[in-house]
Structures are given as C-alpha cells and as structure tokens.
Image (cartoon, rainbow, N blue to C red; front, top):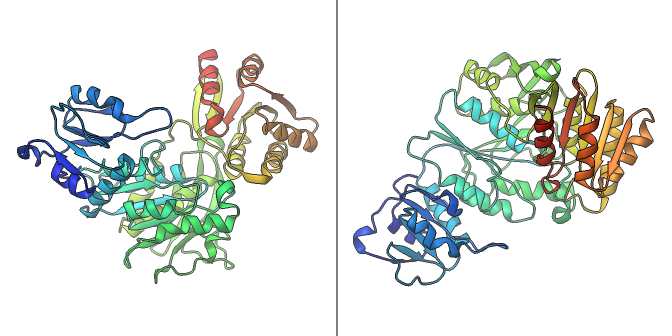
Length: 462
C-alpha cells in the first residue's frame, strides 16, 4: 500500500476520523476484512455478512496491533483511532478507488466465462520476466476481493494482474471503476451465470462493462475464436488485438498458434505467431485450451513492450495452482485436481486433458451451478461428451449429475458409470475402485465440496 494514511482513508470513504490529531498521518501497512489476517499496523474493515458481523471482532484486532479500524457505529473507550462510516463494504470500494487513482503502474484486468484464473497465472508468469508483479490471490475477484487485491499493491510493484468475476449486470461496471484496467482481456463468452444474465448475449453485455473506464490509450485483448467476442471490432476508438488457433482467413486475428503437438499430461508444444515474429514454446500444463492462455499472455506482454524471448520464458515457467488442473502424482495414481469450479466449457476442457491419460481414465464429476433452465440438458451433454472421449469410468454425485450419468450411458454402453446420491457414498466406493496406474479427474462446482474427494484420494494412496 502506497503511503495511505488514516487522513487519506477518511477522505476517500467520506468518513469521520475519531482519534488523536497526531495519528492522522499514520501510514497503513495493509488492509483486510478478515480479522484472522490482521497484522501490526493494518487497517481492519468490518463487513456485515450473512454469518457474522465484522464489528464483533474489533476488540480482537486492536489487541493484535491493528493501527485503526473502520466502524459503522461509534466505539466506546476505543484506545486506537477509528473512522466512522456508513457502510464497510462501500468504504472498502471507495478506499480501493482512491488508492488506484494514485497508482501509475499498468493494471491488466481479466474476465471471461472460463479460464480467468489460468489466464491470470499465465499473464503474471510472462510479465514477471520483466516486472515485479502482483496478481489476484485465490478467488479474490468480486466486489470484496478485487478492492482487497488493489490494496495489496505496494510501492515495489511494477504491474498488477487482476481477475474480475461477475454474475449479474452492473457488477463489472463497479469492478472496472475500481480497477480501471489499462489492458482488458476477455477469454470467452460461455454458458455460465445464466440465472441472471439469461443468454450469451447477456453475458457479453455484462462482461463488456470492463471497458467502461478504459482510457483512450488502453489496450483490449480478445479471443478471436469466440463468435460473440469476434463482433467487437472497435471499442471507444480502440481496435482489439485478437488471438486464435491456426492461421484463419475467416476470422480477425493478430496473434495465433499453429504446429500444435499434444504431449499428453506433459503439456503442449506450439508455434506462436505475432506481428513481431514467431516463437516455439512448450506449455508445461496439459490441455490444448492452455494455448489460448499463452496467446493472451503473449498479447499482454507485447502490449507492455516485452521481447518475445522473455514472453516465451514466462510461458514455459508457468505453474498450476491447487484446484485448477493441478496434476498430483500420489501412490501410483495421477490425480487431476480441477475441483475449484465448473461449467460446461471448462468440463469439456478438463475431460480433454483426462483423455490423454495412460492406462485407465476415471472422471469424478459433480453438479455445475448457475446454468439456468437448461441445466439438466447441459449436464446430460457433459456425460455424453465424456463417453465420446472414451473415458473409461465415470463417478458422479449430486442431483443434476444424474443427468451426466444418463448422458454417458446413452452414448457408450461400454463406459462404466456410477451415480451416488451422496458425496460420502461416492467417495467410499471410489476409493475401493481406484488402483495404481489410474489417471483420475476430480471436477465440480465449488458448492459440491469436491476438494474433500481430492484429499481422500491423496490420503488413501499416499
């Protein structure tokens, strides 16, 4: 955090400073909404949630050494400065906007239906070859997580890569107002969050709010293979940079990949062509969908004037993170931990990765959330796709995944398919079924709690 004082904070959130005048110039070392993360010299911002009210933890954080707190109510006998505010959540956003307005480093904002996090990781890896980079941690990509990410930017950072996730109209506008990205990246317009956004056109409209605060000299990077994104020929006078697979005269493309060699679970080799030359790269993460991530990272690197050799080095040094196509070798098994979240596009991509496994392939699949009125059909199609990819065995749990099992059974009668009403029952049978040499994919939406399955497999086969 760059010289953010208590006086600045009070000004930013239109709050009332309560405390000694001499402490107004105290510089905050960090800002958090989770009392467990408070450190000496931090600002604590209490949020009223469904389960707990952050105000209840104010005495604890002051004992831990917090420099100050925000509060929606007056505090009696408070021994540290505090700032009286109307809303903790709004104050957090206002402080983040104030902080962002004083930053001069480039900020890359990433959104899309699928691939935000893996694209963020790839772009951050590339930019780290030249810059000191801050990137979104975990799932801090919403209206609480994004401002907390922005407040983590320190004086030593030279670039920031932030993920921006939404589920309704207007959310991206508010995120963009805080982040004001210099480079906007959209990975695709898929089938997710249909409960609120209804159609892919609705998703496109909502995601396009990322451009609302883009300056005239800003850059836009889009997936040219996506039929919806391909319609965005010019935004606010800015011509987007499009990336795609293969040289294709029928679509607009500036950066593309060809000569693709699938190395199975060892990744992918390809040639990336740009207006400044071509590079041969080895993407160390399995799945051809990761080529899209590498192309987006190439575009971002070029936008910040990076040489192709450094871009290649960044792509080749990227690492997976837990819960997203993370390959784990345990007890003779290869486990693909991809259970952070799921939608139809990411499910297919993960099944593509699994299909490269040696020996027996096992897909452990769960329900996908927020798919709207066609959710049963979309689950059925995933089951059919798994069978078409010749996955040997499918384990499912959850009410919607009953359709996944049915789709697999209807498509290939040789594919072993098991469906269970409960996660616990499935897990018990799965551990008995698995054997040395299997390649196992675990994937479902976050609410299904499938990380428990990953941990059970690791513990059983360690």
